Amino acid sequence: MIVAEVVGRTLAALGVDMVFGVVGGGNFRVTSALVNGGARFIAARHEGGAATMADAYARVSGKVGVVSVHQGPGLTNVLTGLTEAAKSGTPLVVLAGEATDPRSGRHIDQDALAAAVGAVPMRVEDAGSAAGTAAEAYATATRDRRVVLLNLPLEVQHADAPPAAGEPPALPVRDAAPLARVWPDSGAEALAWMLMRSGKPVFVAGRGARHARRELEELADLVGALLATSTAAKGLFRGSPWDLDVSGAFSSPLTARLIRGADIMVAWGCSLNPWTTRHGALIGPGTEVVQVDLDPESIATHRRVSLGLAGDISDVAAAVAGALRPAGSHPSNPVLRGYRTRALADRIAAERAWRSVPYEDESGDGRIDPRTLTIALDDLLPGERIVATDSGNFMGYPVMFLDVPDEGGFCFTQGFESIGLGLATAVGAALARPDRLPVAAIGDGGALMGIAELETVVRLGLPMVIVVYDDETYGAEAHRLPGHRLETVTSPPADLASIARGYGCAAVTVTALRDLDAVATWLNGPRDRPLLVHAKITRDHHPWWLEGSPERPRPA
Image 1 (cartoon, rainbow, N blue to C red):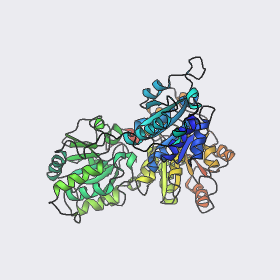
Image 2 (tube, helix red, strand yellow; image 1 turned 90 degrees about the horizontal axis):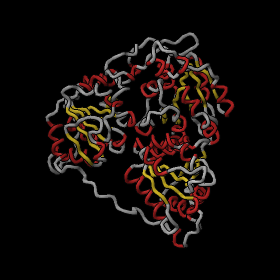
Image 3 (cartoon, rainbow, N blue to C red; image 1 turned 30 degrees about the vertical axis):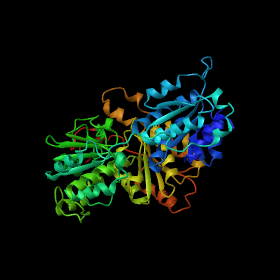
Image 4 (cartoon, one colour; image 1 turned 135 degrees about the horizontal axis):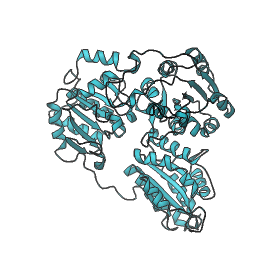
């Protein structure tokens, strides 16, 4: 056995069940060893797509994502996806061959490259430590929610390994420093006191709280809090009468007013970045802000807080609830208190969703209003879906008008705000949840950036609906640059439906509601190939979700 095989077999033995990548001479043996160990290899058409697929797979499955790439250009090709994962705290291991000879055309400083984008560089130095280093990379990704670049120098990975090197070490390789259930020790009591005297509490749960719905709802019932999420945790409280949906840029008018009216906002596993607070406009002048996060370094990164608590979200919420209940008592049936009234519950049911907000349909002249399009798709597509979006001017429409059944129904790779990741995101999410209909919502710019992965969708036989919102422009820039020469951000029409058919997809061009009959036909059929919906959308509408104000402009 050689070192590359030891690394691959170690990772497979530790639980890696899927690896994404593009194979070259520098990563062929480690990839083969992973497959021989039981992992499934997903071949992407571009390393950047592979990295994003692995990122989305990790987000949705809760497992560590793994990417395997060639040395040099194989690694540079993954950088955007790697950066997105690093900024989002995705546990990810990147296996990369490494040319250590400076005379090699593929030699680069791979450690510096990783560190520059927030990843942790590690290296297999010799045969004797190969298994331990591979397991340490896996443990670091899991424990610290980090992206780890595991460099595999060519001369080392092809060296013979001693027989004992094939035995995988037990995890954890080293124990993480014990993290207090709640830090500081008095934090739970302090937050309990703040909530007890609050009249209008709001909880905002982020990606770090996706595992803690039960504990957060029990605490919210005790104090009468309304429930909202960051976009990354969309769907977490679906089914609750107090669910406000998304806080921030994509909030409906009612949601924005209620959040801004809170006297205390508690952010659970949520960074409170400008997207979630509308650049602070959703935080009222008298609102106290509390932030709870597993990572103490994340607290108060984006704004000052009245109280910061470090600890697992479930543990902290349970500790605060325990401080509010008499010793030995159990959760009781929720009662109306705090922000909650029967009248407000009725308003939330009637007005929370964006589709309840009146608007003037601007469809016509061969183009369909994206709001009208998305509402119709929401009605057509089955409820058991997983929606993945790209970045761009269009993205508010799928976020705001496509509902999801729970927090596992939405995958949002927006930490780096890069265009072109949407289709690959949908592939990774689809592989993590094969029981749901995958829906990719992308713009025309992002579609053409990532179109190589359309072949991957077809080859894998994914029954995916790919909706392209085509306004033939980079719309955000066009709306932000009035009076400037716009030919730099516009493009001629492209027949995306024909391109998709060339890849092996079913396809339909949509310019009016009647064209969506083809979507219904596909849904009622065998779904034996993906469907691309080329939607020619109206392009004069300014994206109101990019505004800082919680109230204007209204979509009407």
